[in-house]
Image (tube, rainbow over all chains, first blue to last red; front, side, top):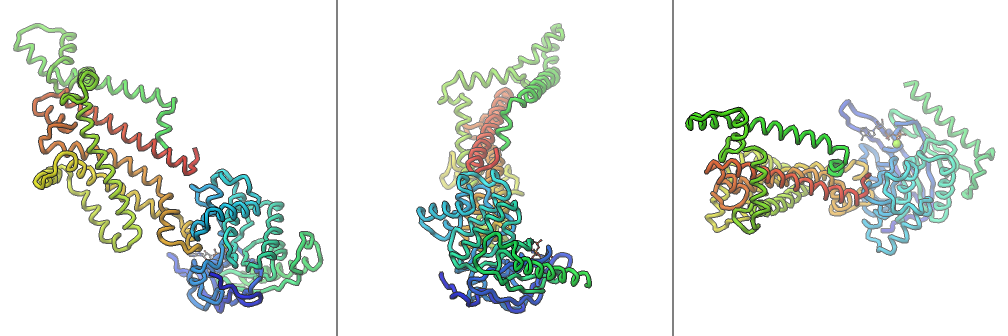
Length: 268
Length: 295
Ligand SMILES: Nc1ncnc2c1ncn2[C@@H]1O[C@H](COP(=O)(O)OP(=O)(O)OP(=O)(O)O)[C@@H](O)[C@H]1O
Ligand SMILES: [Mg+2]
């Protein structure tokens, strides 16, 4: 199961990825010429306007979508093999909880499937629910929770088992600022502690800068990588790092990158 | 979900109004339909009659074209409460004979329907090869093949409950197949994608996603299936001149012009169907509530 690469080795390697959806009204070019390397222990954020292919890229990495061109390896093997090795946890853009399961049983779903013992299931569910501040909601059904709480439950579900890659599609999009700050901190701590590799989609520039070691800026039609910004921030990041000039400088660069992507779109 | 609503107090009055209206229309129809024969009787006897005589007499004929509601009610009372349930003249006895075949056929039909649906959903070849036969099976009128099934099974020594139950099975598996194929295919793409990210086996996807997701579909099809299972059992009692069961009562009633007996058997069958369907409804709300459905 563990094919984890040592720190610094590339975990996800995309080479000239291309994906065109064949739809009822013509082909949609969702990804074009995406080349990218994510190293072990990286925290990479994807940012870009709606419809630029962020979800699609994550789904390709997760072997939920087949690229129509280019090459991709995950943990040094094909995405399919990586999926079969249960190499990643995926947080979908929607919570996708099963409505007939309680919150605890939703979080325990991957553990059941992967054959963890009862005792270990209980222990892990309790631990991850605590991590997302949902202790006390174990026996509630999803419809009894707010949208943001449901999303947190879906994050807990992805953290419940030990995948060393986390693919997160706008996980904090539905949350208020305070909860978002809290979860951002929690996620950073988890990342520092476990040495996971995280690919993270967001629409928020401060969030991307605060969390990431690298920020990938994308532009739409066709979806392509327009800029990759290396963060110069230290790995230890208190929340007030967001007021430092260094932080604002990186945020500014991301914003410029997004602007360039937009004008690129206008020129077409 | 709907069974709970039907028992709500707010619906009692409209239901009562409808019942009263039906009984009223029934009485009017009784008088109207039985008048010609009653007039003949008066003529033959050469006796004078008033309208009130006519009204009273049309509701008291022994073999009316349409028996009055109270005649049927009295007949039902006499053949249920006032007869031992083991008596051949007890409606409870006949209802039980039909009910046992219905339940056996319903159980077999549901299992068969679910098994076929599972095969169809999991296997493209079954989907193509089985589904057309499933649909074709229902285009054959049951009245045409019921006698053949009964006769053939009798010839190989099977009689009594099983042949009737098989006719019920034949009718009831169909809604279950159709409903469950739809239900098992109903999970959304994102719910299936989640299973894929865990590289869950087909069996895990079935038990943890498809099966629980299809429960509302299962109960909806079971409501239809239990009602037509009853029809199947009654039809199965018609062609052989069976001596017991609601179907036999219908047949015997029509041989001897015993319309009161026919109507009481019919109403009993209808009541039985209503009870069976609402029992499925109760099971439906119980299961779905346990699965966290909104109350
Ligand atoms: N299954 C599909 N079939 C056809 N077209 C698709 C499919 N999935 C995505 N697309 C198209 O591909 C493009 C990229 O979609 P994608 O969901 O990756 O965008 P996104 O960057 O995640 O957007 P958002 O920020 O709104 O979530 C869009 O134009 C979308 O319409
Ligand atoms: Mg998206």
